[in-house]
Image (cartoon, rainbow, N blue to C red; front, side):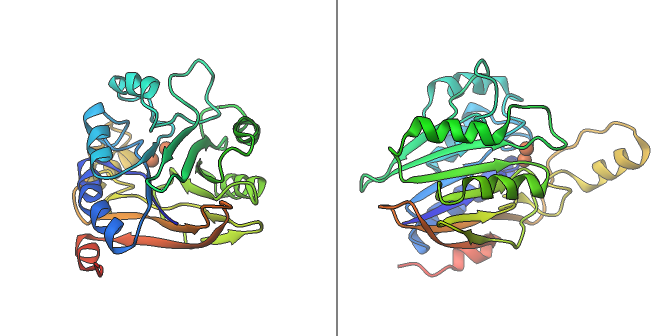
Length: 268
Ligand SMILES: [Fe+2]
Ligand SMILES: [Fe+2]
């Protein structure tokens, strides 16, 4: 089976790309399941319920978030009640949301997703390694296809999470830094890995925000609104190929496309 995992969706340009690309890629690439990190989907920080519904309608099966998860408080009700969006598994128990989510595909295959936050240059959270171990112990071998979003700032944090989980999950895919890395690989035991899947949003930007604003504030310390940029929207992510029966990944391929590229992708 083939899983498309899209990286941090930023603002309206990112959501627009998902709406156009996901139906096209599902068909052209034979995608069975779509997972997306959407922590920046509304105004660049957090996500509103309206945008959540738009992403789901576009064909995103499961949604992960990150450090910006509660920036739009209207999302909290959805985080508590909906089974297709998760909070990081190493957040406190009291933090709203589900640590583990799953989708049952038309052929009966169950895909389990959870995320963990890194601890370097980020707000202090519980140990991501222990949190992942807890999730896997609770699953108790019930699911084969398990995809982990490693939401972290430091590359070493993500590699460590990948190596900690290799052979036990289908994929460990990095998000948060918004820059796609070229180190996709299959770790020992059939775990697909990449340090960052990249950003789905405007690339004429600083990680999705207007260049002039970020540059001015960085140089002068004067605060400016870091509005979402508009130019050069692209989708970024990976396609992971795995065996539904064993959950082992056989291949991982990077995806980075503008609208012209995915509309030209060969269709059936
Ligand atoms: Fe992000
Ligand atoms: Fe983040």
